[in-house]
Image 1 (cartoon, rainbow, N blue to C red):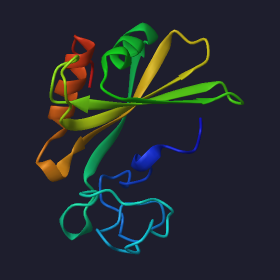
Image 2: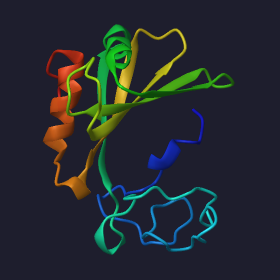
Image 3: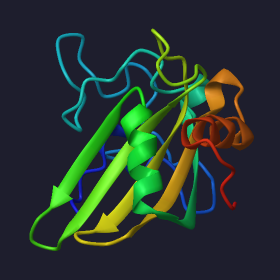
Image 4: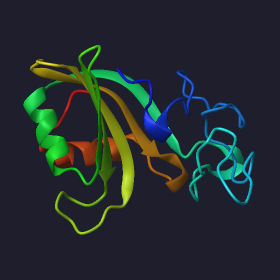
Length: 159
């Protein structure tokens, strides 16, 4: 799989804690390491609201392993507001990060609730949901991300 995971890579420790500000590739407090004219020292331009109060990470996430039929996963990202698909041809891996919205599929706008990440091998019939995340700074919980995910899929998933 490609090593790039977008802005979500490594923002949280496996135990659920927040990594310290200033660690390359991690979320940083607004203005930390950034010049007014360009990106921070990690090479990215921090988005407004990227870090919460006191440098805490906006997105909380949990690693998991939920196997779903590939057709179900494809139906999900076919309806999603935004999907980031990556393909590692050398290893035969596909990965997709799906934005989860409060609004139902087909709505004119999207209020982000969270995101989820799927991976699968070329030619596979199943995909693995391996991470789900929610917007902790907005006061949302993991259950809110699951609700948005299940709304897109149209059925409950094992947790």
